[in-house]
Length: 60
Image 1 (cartoon, rainbow, N blue to C red):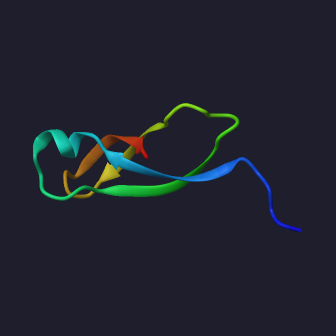
Image 2 (cartoon, rainbow, N blue to C red; image 1 turned 180 degrees about the horizontal axis):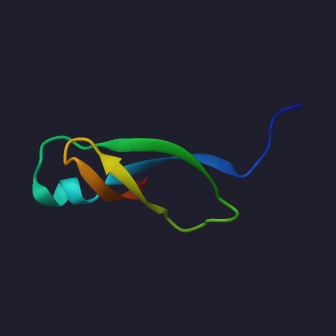
């Protein structure tokens, strides 16, 4: 039997790095339960290029 569930894979991209104009973009890949969190996620993660914790937003 195949595995069925509500978990999907999402990509989180740094929002502050885009504003500052630093080249490239840093992304994290994670999973979320679509049933519990139907809206786009926002998490605070570490950005090694900016050397600080920044807000990462879910992209499509």
